Amino acid sequence: MRAPRLDGLIFGINAKDQAVFFRQLATMIDAGMPTAKALATLRPQLSGRLGALVGELLEYCDQGHPLSDGIARYPEYFSPFVVAMLRAGEVGGAIDRRLIEVADFLESSYAIQQNIASQLIYPAVIIHAGIVLPPLFVLVTQGMAPYLRIVLPALLVMWTVVIGLYCTARMGAVRPGARALLDRLLLSLPLFSKVVRGAACMRFLQAFGDLLDAGVPSPTAVEVAGRACGNVVLGNRLSATSRMMADGMSVTAALTSSGVLPPATLGMIATGEESGSIGHLMRKASEYLQIEHRESLKRMMTVFPVILMLIIGVIVGIGYIRAFAGLFSQINSIVP
Image 1 (cartoon, rainbow, N blue to C red):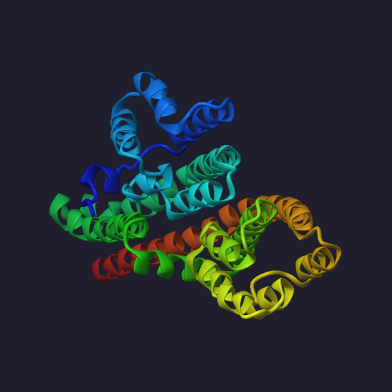
Image 2: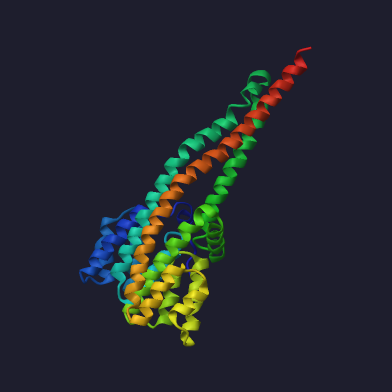
């Protein structure tokens, strides 16, 4: 087991660059090119960390290892979801389709990251102004040293929290315990839980349906698809139904016991199980959930900036009240 690289833990690889790489790889594999040859073709076109990484993947795949195992050796660059999707594709014989879905997911993630970053610029300016501006009277009346003693601790605390959250998120990529903690936290937050759960159910149903149509037994298929859902907590609950199916329980009953899938989706699965077209109906259910997921995501991106601005407004307001309270107390001590 190789040690994660420090630059990978800090910077990773841009999601957009990963999406382009996986999409090109999917096109070549779909055209009938072996994985190792496709990697060798792409290698000269890439540079930086991704180019070096693809070179190492090529050497690993040339030794007869599957692509998913090679990707899994670099958790600081590739998420567990990517690894699980590739393994689902290898088991079901549809690696090119899984690569395209991974590319779509990464492109969507990149767009969300850019949207959030643009939404955070104005709040970041406001909160810095709220820290730096209120104590200006201290700079005028007492000099630079007292002013810095007020401003620097506040900035230090703020940036320590920001850096700590970022490092926690990055460490979640290489430590399963941290990843599970982050996933559990997202599921507990009202603003994010519906979006996270919807995305996980959508990916699970798509992967499970494809695996069943490829002839994979349902106990194996549900275990692989559970890992591909993108959420450790929900994935573990879904994968745990594998033993129930192996013991003879129906797919619908086993998935119902997990408490993850919505009732309407379970109804479609039951219909598919009775009619013998469970894989097809699972993919249809995934398409319906995808529409709901987009709407939930749009609502979240509308509400999130508003809530963020309200929180920052309260913090800045408290800072101004404390600053002016200190100013008025100084004025009262001067004026007889």
